[in-house]
Amino acid sequence: MTTIAFIGLGNMGLGMASNLAKAGHVVRALDINADALAKAVAAGCVQAKNAEDAVATADIVVTMLPAGKHVELVYADVMTHAAPSTLFIDCSTIDVDIARKVIAEAEEAGFAMIDAPVSGGVGGATAGTLTFMCGGTEPAFRRAKPVLDIMGKNIFHAGGAGNGQVAKIANNMLLGIHMIGTCEAFNLAEKLGLDAQTFFDISSTASGQNWSMTSYCPAPGPVETAPSNHDYQPGFAAAMMLKDLRLAQDAAQSAKAATPLGAQAMALYGLMEASGDDGLDFSGIMKLIDGTL
Ligand code: NAD
Figure 1 (tube, rainbow, N blue to C red):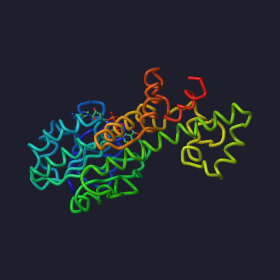
Figure 2: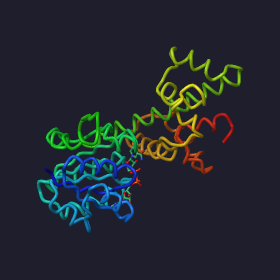
Figure 3: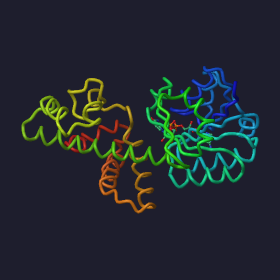
Figure 4: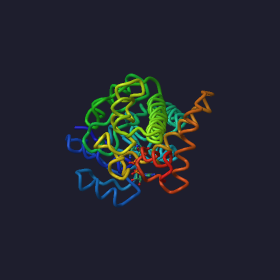
């Protein structure tokens, strides 16, 4: 049995912490939101009073926080209270540079730490089927793996510190781009007199085939379970896609990597934010493309 401090029990963290508690670990939960904390306690976690109370007796600290600034703030506190052998696992999606900075600070202070952002959404967090993309040293990854196995199904070691974040933002930038491209193709076909189902039947077995089309089709009709058939309710909200596209553009600038389509995808999802429609699923960008937003 391991004692795990879990900090950040929001939409994702709640399911993840619950699965660790269900597996028999002592989970010491901490969140600035009282409702989130109460749900975690109801799911079998132990309420911690503050960072010191959460981490002082913990073998492992897991964080699932909104953004880089929260991760910096929380680990500054955690590092002053954790025992030297404690392993830190940050599962938040944050800037590559901040992830690398916080891991370097942790290692300098004698802690082991990995970045381990996820894909799979709230459903995956609840079901324990998340995909983890991890960055950090091999020994730190090996220590984290049994805990990640409880919360996820596919666990990848992507290389050194920050490489988990690199994998996550590069993947999601590609997802945003092929979603928009798929919307344009369905809209063009429809405007020229080709219905969505017929175009789907042809393109899904031809070279235009991609995940946005076959698993998450943005045109209503062809894929029954897709958000397009449920008023574009998320799923994966456009606001979350925009967050990841912004992280990708920041990272691309600092790496001097050319990402013109990533920049365009960010601008288009920015229009959904500006019109107040970023609560829709990210496939709802179909409505921007076909002029119905
Ligand atoms: P959320 O806002 O629901 O949860 C974050 C929690 O952190 C909140 O409960 C908040 O109160 C808490 N928090 C903030 N600052 C804190 C602090 N200083 N101390 C303690 N607790 C603090 O967000 P979420 O949807 O659970 O997402 C968490 C992370 O996972 C984000 O980085 C997000 O990009 C990433 N992610 C989310 C999804 C998704 O579908 N929701 C999917 C993949 C990755």
